[in-house]
Amino acid sequence: MVTEAFEFVAVPFNSDGWGPPDASDVSSSASPTSVAAANLLPNVPFASFSRSDKLGRVADWTRNLSNPSARPNTGSKSDPSAVFDFSAFAIDEGFGLASSGGNPDEDSAFRLVDGKPPPRPKFGPKWRFNPHHNRNQLPQRRDEEVEAKKRDAEKERARRDRLYNNNRNNIHHQRREAAAFKSSVDIQPEWNMLEQIPFSTFSKLSYTVQEPEDLLLCGGLEYYNRLFDRITPKNERRLERFKNRNFFKVTTSDDPVIRRLAKEDKATVFATDAILAALMCAPRSVYSWDIVIQRVGNKLFFDKRDGSQLDLLSVHETSQEPLPESKDDINSAHSLGVEAAYINQNFSQQVLVRDGKKETFDEANPFANEGEEIASVAYRYRRWKLDDNMHLVARCELQSVADLNNQRSFLTLNALNEFDPKYSGVDWRQKLETQRGAVLATELKNNGNKLAKWTAQALLANADMMKIGFVSRVHPRDHFNHVILSVLGYKPKDFAGQINLNTSNMWGIVKSIVDLCMKLSEGKYVLVKDPSKPQVRIYEVPPDAFENDYVEEPLPEDEQVQPTEENTEGAEASVAATKETEEKKADDAQA
Image (cartoon, rainbow, N blue to C red; front, side, top):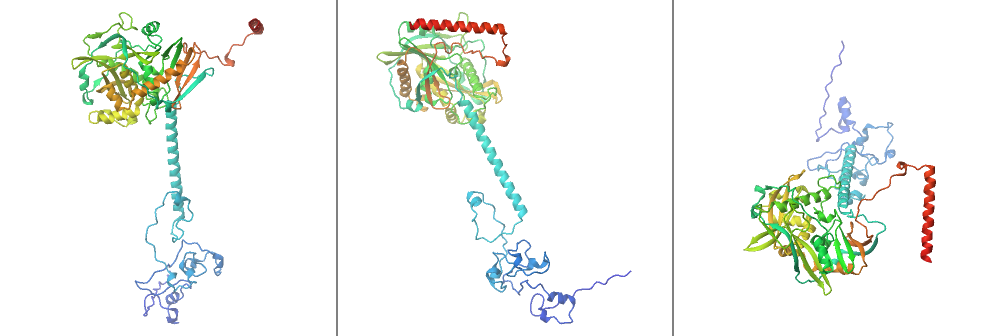
């Protein structure tokens, strides 16, 4: 077997300095290695150097030749020596040899090696859309494929973020519209709009009324249990249910006492405290509501419809955080309104002393039947003088009585409810004991209209104290079981000053609405808060409107039973006869 001998290469010695010797110094009898070292590539710049000298490129596999057609033809499409070619024909536009005329001895022919990491991409309109950005910087060596992937990934991330933000904003916008842009009553096309009053005009109104006089006090009140003032989140009390006690939400014209006072000509305008509070606090409202106005002779009655929005308590009405749209959701505006009304009624009965002691007044409850268990409530009929020829009578409610400083004091009882701390941003169980002011400020932001109406009702009823309970769900997803976390008491006048509720402005709004309605002719009207704008509208409606909310909708034509031909002929004959009769009546009337 023949094996080739391995020839050890000889390294030529350069006595003049570093690097291989020049070709002229190599003798003819030199080894092949020496000859190969002498026959270096012709275009590779090389010079002796020291540590202080600049080091240039030896080879560059990443750059693109700016003008490959101008290079000398080597006979090969892919010349392996092209990466070592730093002549004037194959130099980049930004390389220094081009500016030095291809002379490698010039200092500009060399460039320092940039050891700095590539700059991080700057995201912004100036970087993204300015094509002349960093034009004067030297070109960076990049892997084109990696850079392209990075750019694509960044674009995809930006697209996802933009899509997520758009969807989030659209969902919130739709939820807010679903809660606020739904009218409380369906506006019929035959209704005639008479007035349109923006809320901006209400803020400028002011009217001062004299102290009212009490005409009658009906019903009975139980005493307030002061033990509930000591409740804290650590010793919370379970909210009980009072299913056997009856609560009455009777409108103005159905009140027998108001009818009697109207017959006795005690006043010209009649309303309830809930209706007046809705008018007085109208500029703070967001949800739509409506009030029925009846002009009978020289008298004016402000009524509410059966099942009106005024019977429920709004929740998160003035909050910027949207509520779920679906009515079936336990956190929707409608579901929370029903839950708040349920909590408010039970709370007003649980905080009472259950010893059977009751404070009775001039007359019994006008809406209760004999033997019926009724809630603790007193109706105070009061009369205000609006001007020389106009008086207003309102039925005001009180829920309890207490002995304060050896004097009988009337109380109103209401409850705020917490359904999910994520919506309000404040957890009552953690903040009520240490930061009550922060909790109350949050409720004023989220439920400003409801608290203002409660304060207005307490002022109308001349209550000495208004008790506000803080009731929360046992669990955020359980809307049946609740606990009482705390009970706070406020004087109505002081609390009105805290929430910036001006009594002169309240009566100015009522006086302007009453003066406007007194100019209308006899009939029935409805005042509706616009569902999408801060304004109210007054419509003229038929006399039988709202008496029966059920409207029979016709079946589709394909589901209707088609009459036979005989029945069709008979129907046509009856219609013709009816037309003839109507024409005769019209002729007789003209004659």
